[in-house]
Image (cartoon, rainbow over all chains, first blue to last red; front, top):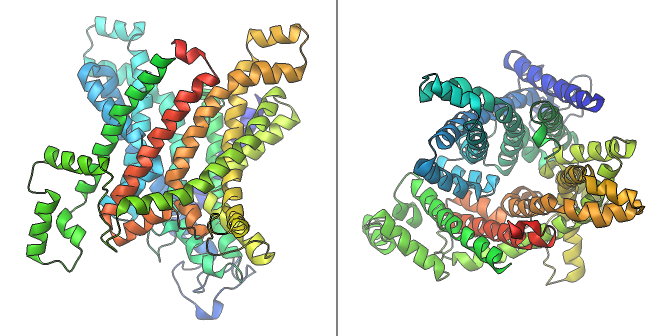
Length: 272
Length: 314
């Protein structure tokens, strides 16, 4: 048990730092993240610029803070999209069964047959490579996994006595679904949504790194890494700090996800 | 056994059909007239009209799909808008570059990670276990493109041990080709080993709790024999499935690694085609990777009874 709390503690601290940084970045950054300064180009980390400056003399720390905001925002909207759509689809599919379920699950499985990032790439070709394109592309790519998990939970729940009881008491189908089935699906939804938040942040930074994400000059951790690449030899910090931010965030989410999984869903314990 | 194989094959067919429909539909969702998109910005109205007929865009959607699917079955994936190259040979040649890296990396990662995961489970809650799981969690949290950049910075730029830019195929020059492979493969191995250690540990733990393991120990078998002959064989199934998923995911998601190490693989082709709005190539890449993913998972499924014969009986 001790180890579990340690996981949760470290993960919680890392995520809290991320959220606070993103929130502070909304109102205040040490420097203007977009302000060019040709006298301060590629300045090493020091007293003036804690984490150095980039090839245009922009303050790296300020840009990382604004980047945190972008990551959290895109991650949250993507997960929100997948949770809402996936839960709705899963609820309908699992509750209706029959041909409705058959059709929905056939489409769902076809989408699951694509590796997630590939589907997102294909959808980006449709939506265009920008912030909202990413949110839709990743949201659609993650929806099938959520739908499948919710449907599975609904299918096992609907055979339980308390659902039967709710029907016998004369409650409507919709009421039963929202009042009794949905709350009991929250544990698996929470566990999956936590992992998805990590996937979304990783995919967003990967897509931005490829140039298919949020376009510069708006800073995201991914496009900062991509922009810093040509200068790595003179300015290693440009390659170091944005990646460290992504890695620490993912570590926090993974640790928190493990702790949540152990707490909420003993059956999924230890799986990835 | 034959029934098992046939049923798995039969299950793959609807998936393949649905995957093809999805790829077809996806490209049709792109705003604008596909004929105009395929001809590019300089097209004249009469050229577009001729292209519409050639592509069969004047027919109904199901008819269009059948024409496209028929072409695909004959190996005709269309031609690139950018340089008029046939899509299928282009996709296949780039796929071979990516596959080389992915297969070697997944193989090495499994060889390292599976024993490590089994040991971690065997020594559950010991310092060894804590260290292995901790390391694995850290490793899988490091994005591959960042890890790749760091390795490139250290071994390529600072130490100068390995080449930094470019790519040489193994078939052209074995030694150079291998040198160019080292960093991308090591990057992927480090990341995927993290995933696999945790998976192997979790599935071994499930098995180690069972009564027959206690029985095997009570019989006086050595720990090595218990682990290898009894625990590992039964625990490997889920890890095997995970290896298949990783293999397929990497084929789709290797674009970032190929960008970091300037490797002309399938992922890079796909990204470049998205930039160039080269829809036939995007469509070809999507279809090819999705079908390979289905195929890899099918093969993984078909080989599963080697590790767990119970699935055939079901």
